[in-house]
Image (tube, rainbow, N blue to C red; front, side):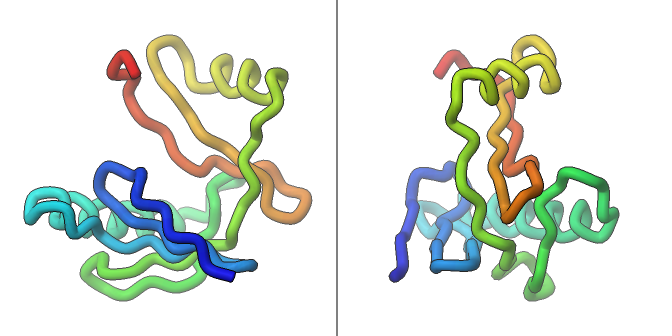
Length: 113
């Protein structure tokens, strides 16, 4: 079963049963370039192997594709409150679970959304 998520600003995510495949958005040239940069940055962060970061399992140089394990979103009220304490004021975060580990999925500046 595949699920395609076009809600990201700079990337499209294809979810399989076990993996998340992140591709640059094709909505515009600018967003495509920003998606390439986001994938390249995520690849570099993955090399750091910091605890809590979602690991990059595979990537294509140049940012065309990043493959990560699929995570389930942390949606409990308690989990969201904990994220806000970790992220700090004025920041929004997303986290989830892959197997038994809690992982950071994304972080972005609060734009009044």
